[in-house]
Image (cartoon, rainbow, N blue to C red; front, side, top):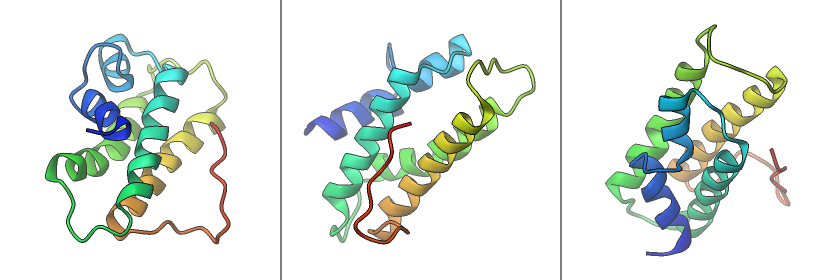
Length: 117
């Protein structure tokens, strides 16, 4: 399994140290773990954009993560030490990556550079 899929497997299964596990159990938005997840999602999008078939487990993760993260962190008691625009940008990025994964292209004009969050 390549690096991007390995990371996504760990993330989507909420393994120890994953962004999703820290978010769910510790109520902690780990910026480094989010960046690792986001970069892996982007890499998988790049690698599969010409694919005619998608793996179900990957598709389920791309489908559920954007809405789950948005819903879970929207609670008024969720700790948000970063500026609100940071969280909005991250949630938008997850949604953009899901769109890219499913349609095989992103919605931005090329050449497009994905800003670090």
